[in-house]
Image 1 (spheres, one colour):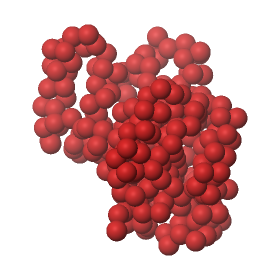
Image 2 (cartoon, one colour; image 1 turned 90 degrees about the vertical axis):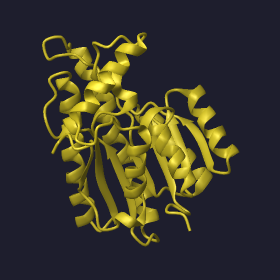
Image 3 (tube, helix red, strand yellow; image 1 turned 180 degrees about the vertical axis):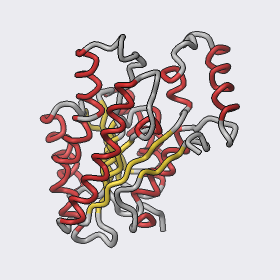
Image 4 (cartoon, helix red, strand yellow; image 1 turned 135 degrees about the vertical axis):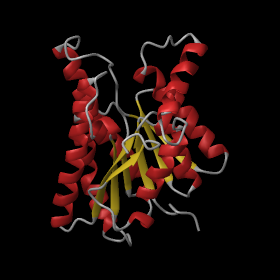
Length: 264
């Protein structure tokens, strides 16, 4: 038996990076996966790939900052699979601007995705998650993608750190609220450190068109970590699958750090 057999999962920002790795891993573990993203072409291609190797997936267009998009995505999920067990709020953006450089428009943009997106997803998926939790051994689950800079400050992008810190405390607050109300919905957050797909954003001085510069940035990070390598998207996806599974049935309000020892 696979870890996610029979579960239905909606993953935002699933057309690439951590989101795509998560969708693939969930499908391999037996889940029916809804790939939700603004990038239609790559999202549809991923769904087709998963279906080709025997998984179950379909794509829905979702701008997480738009309430109507969320309503449509959740409606499509229920219409196809008759419920929802797992919500992965993974979609996010990174600006790499200092407090002095950032504008109010920048603040509004990053908050609309990183914060409003998590709020809208949680609120609008709640009825479906609560309903499925009634018949699930360990209830339903929400997994919010935060960051290590949601636990400490970032000198590179303070607005990103602010939003990820908000996700951290929102996770804990909703975990308490849903637990106290008897909803049987667990809520946890994941806190990646340096991940291969985020290298350019975290080290903006490296030229995206210069493989040598990117490799130098990668090596600098790896050397600073006790584990001596940067994370791959699959490393983060494995943690999300664990939190989505019944193996994490006694975890809620937790912050799962996956950073190669950086925070230590």
